[in-house]
Length: 207
Image 1 (cartoon, rainbow, N blue to C red):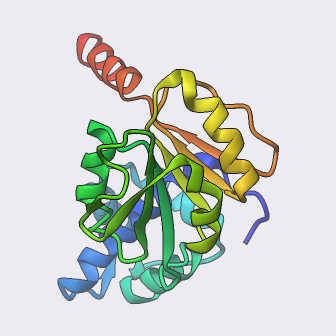
Image 2: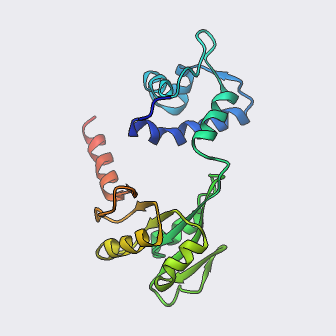
Image 3: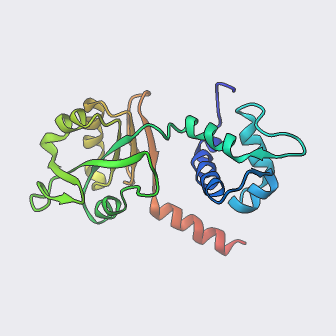
């Protein structure tokens, strides 16, 4: 396996894992890149190129062994390791994420939440307790949390990010429009729903 995997490839790995899991659960033993392409709606050339970064994974004339491929991606994605995520901001979007709580993934869950609103502090959404921001550093360390989801007002995003970094967070999924300044060792995934919707509308209008 090469040291540097393209970002676009890494973003597709969870998608491959999800569809391979479905295939395995259906009893599918083998699949070709073209069959997988039809299922996932990604061209087969891209799939073969993505897989090639990890060495020889298929056999000519046979295709891919679904069980072997699933086991490989399970290891790559650390599916046997439970990841506890912190949610910062329990507004409408935060509530939606708490209700969803990654129930389709076996290894990711929101374990702790934070807000400044006195009406939600001390409450529970499912099994997740909402703490005041004053408790952020203490609770993140207590829950051994490396990843945070940020769903706060944009003007508060950078200040809270600084606190998360000080608390030891390694990665942030940022739902705000603020482009966060973080140290090089911190990963940030920006999720701009408005931009994504505008991109979709543009794509529809320019087909």
